[in-house]
Amino acid sequence: MSSQTAGQVCAHHHLYSTLARGMPAPNRTSGSFLEILQDIWWRLDAALDLDMIYWSAKLGATEALMSGTTCIIDHHESPNCIEGSLSTIARACAEVGVRVNACYGVTDRFSNQNQLLSKVSPLSKTTDGAARGLTECDDFLSSGGRGMVGVHAAFTCSDETLHGAAELAKKHSVGVHIHVAEGPEDSQAGARLEKLAQDDWLLVHGVHLDRDIKGYLVHNPRSNMNNAVGYAKPTRRNNRVLLGTDGIGADMNDEARLAYARLREFDVTENPATVWSWLANSYDFFPEARHDKVTYNYDFADSPWHSAFTTNLQVLSVEVDGEKVLQDGRPTRVDLDEVRSKANEQAVRLHKRLEN
Ligand SMILES: [Zn+2]
Image 1 (cartoon, helix red, strand yellow):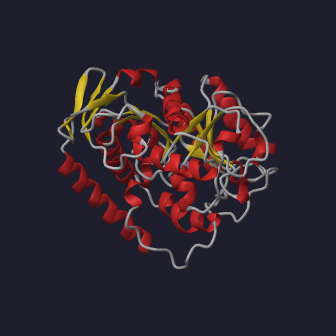
Image 2: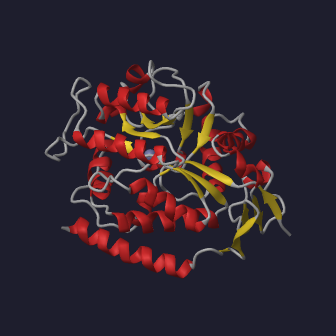
């Protein structure tokens, strides 16, 4: 009793968030999307160093592989540890046998004195932090790394930085990977990006996007629900839609099931094939994943009408470029127990840092 699919692609991940699970709670109950960013994610990313980034990526890639995901489009931020972060992530993924498309998400939300700014004016100058982020993308891509130019979001960047990112992407013939109108705070994103965006850009979320702009739309249903930002209604757009997890694991069958349930709640005439076509669209970024072989403990994993309603699919083995990188549910290139325990050591260090 088994069936096969191609390798799955997570079109928007934050591998640095793998160690966030169980982190110390913030001092207040976050009451909005912006407060969730301030209280959780902007505390976490500022505390990261290279050891944490490496083991976070390694555990994230290992868990991805165990879910049948062989390719990850990652969006990384570590404002106090920028240089070398992308090659560290790429190395961790390669060691597990998972392909990654990496980028550093630039932002002007820190002043040149490294203070978190409450607001970033579009008319302000590119900050030192954003310039270093652009250089990290430039260096990684120039040295042959597979990636894109990352931007956190328009509302934390000056127009100068958005232009700089677009220019750098053009220089490397890649797109820009950017959060777009995830919450109401970023509702100006459409107006600010419409003249810059290109067909190869990854527009992540688009929940509060007020116009059509060029690029792929990456839908992250679980994260959107978790942050209470609203439903992105991806079917109302003309963009090619991809599916991401926004850092909450990389189990794409699971994300697709949730995407389907949310879509169906919005439009009862919809069917699972719509959502499974979003999974297939990601092969534009990783065409070779079509040849990966994921074997499941279930006869119909290749059928959307079965997968959408089968909540306990298990991945038995994964073959990438002809090599078995997962066998009997366990990774072959790395020791699962060692990855978990080393990652946990880094999680303890990280959480201690967050308490102080
Ligand atoms: Zn994200």
